[in-house]
Image (tube, rainbow, N blue to C red; front, side):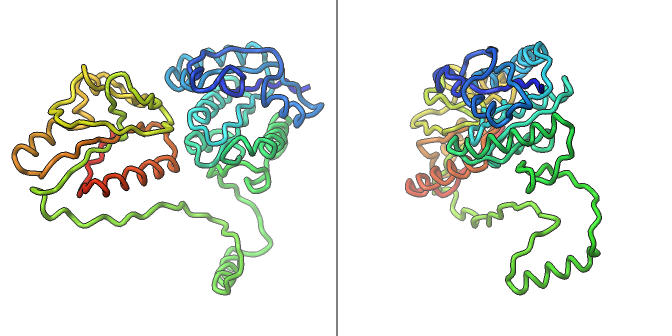
Length: 347
């Protein structure tokens, strides 16, 4: 019998939603939440001996401590297999699943499997290290995801040969293997070219990465009359983080009024970002969001004016899809407010 330890977050553990995202790791005997479906998919070959639950915020804000504590929990059960999730498109959950899976694999030398939507930041961070089954965007895809995860997990536990991503259902890891084909590469290449010219379907043997190409806007010709806005992925927010922007895998952005503000101070602003040492940013938030310098340029007549609002989110682990969504929404507001240029700052 293959012994399995399953990892889930506070929501699937039945503890609560975002208000309980700071709960520390805890372990429960047997099956919890989605583990019921996983148990059925694993069948008689495996048994879920324990379920580990941890809040998404706690894990991502205390990665080293949480990982160490969870590793001890996993090790105590001496499992043959570790399964995390599925996390779908929940960013912090995905990062937690990927982080702990890699730690279990590296430290305990047992097979691991998780499941995520391809645009989950955890998938991009860990797809080269572990097997991550491709899932739907939300938990509506649970029924399809669980059987694929279970099948792949059992093959890993039994040390069976793992097929290509299209066959096994996991996200491509960028691993290449030499195989023999009946036809030479030159003929296969010509066949693909002919199919492409004819508009017929074909599958490339070497998929290329797809990068967005953004044409730069023309330069601002009259800076002395231009309205300039500040936007940051460095997480600068008013003291207390009123919108509760997450330290990692941000699910939102904030819009904040700086009318009449000449300087950001540690009494008025701070960073919500969890991906860099916040000490210097908290001492002087202008280091990330240069309101003080823009005010000087405004007074000197170098720029027309600094826009009344700045926009902020956290870039740490935030998915490309969410980043595009935030950028689109922010850009529409800036255009409507007559902003001619944006200074975008990071960390």
